[in-house]
Length: 480
Image (cartoon, rainbow, N blue to C red; front, top):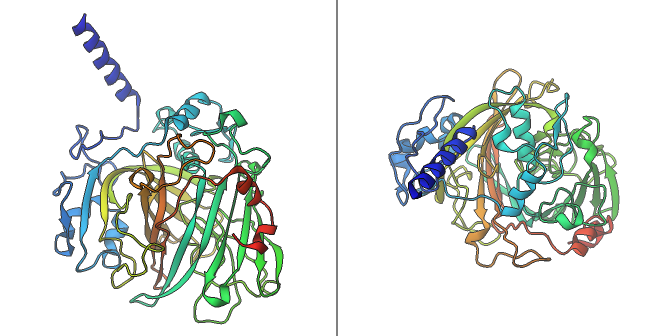
């Protein structure tokens, strides 16, 4: 009987593995039975020449070449430096979200539908398309995965302080902007089944986001609020609602937000007179703003929070495949706002002196048919962690196939932070979330770059009263 039971369990395990077209190696397995995936997509990666606990310096950097996107390796002098100490972390550590999120994905399996235009309808909570139900040969697999990336588990959103350093010139002279930002997820909240999977009294909005600058002086108290509604999932013409507070005028004004894909961030350029502006979509430039009516807008290069929000309806995605990569998915070396003196190398872009871990990444490519300007991103490649769907790497190309920028993302795991806040309505509910602790992007066309530090970001929401208060335009004038 025991033998039969063991055989049955083995058969069920083998059947489940065979049924899952997107397998993730077992936790701690640096040499998984199915091998490691390399680049070009479809080729095997060589066995790793390092192990957990190793420290890799610049002289040994070639050991990790096979486990980086090729575009990042091509510009490695910007992201790695002499004196770096890269600690190799665990292989394929389990960062899976809590059970209530998995339960929501299962409960609404088959409810979400992909529209002919690439939009989404019927999503309630959890992932709209369970990974084991996505056929790799399906021509819509990329679009389904893009919607999963957008719907990935993020607890209640995010909130915290940030510093964005505009790195001017080849060496990267830092010009910092400091502030605070938040994103409150209002709908599709897997933690709230008793409330219809949303925060009560916030209908019909899906989320609200906003922020405020503290530094430099000429941007101080500049603030904004951005709202998204369900119509943006199905209608390409349905834009976000955006409001901006101009401290010199002490007024709140509505701004056009058509084409803004992700989190709005006012644009800036240090060392020039104020004027000229535009919101940046999360994965690239968005619409424009009439600066004549908004004199306090500030010029920028990028938003600083790429990878946090997608709007898959704006482009068509395809799956290029999977690649096993090293990435700083769980940083251990403090940055702003905990410390001001961390070294980021001569270009100001390196998080190399930190812990990097081996992860299985899904590589998505999105094409924007509306990118008519030669300098606009027409092709975007995104490496996302296959287990958590958080962004790891990003590359963009213009319509002529020339690289525009390349960058990567830094995370932190809530369960490694003893002081991490708890859910306000249930302190015993597990959090298990990866926060966005930073990012670094090299703009290859402008010879500029930027770095974002947000090392103390958290993702559990504030109380329902505070979340509802964040919807009010009065919060722009009162500060947060």
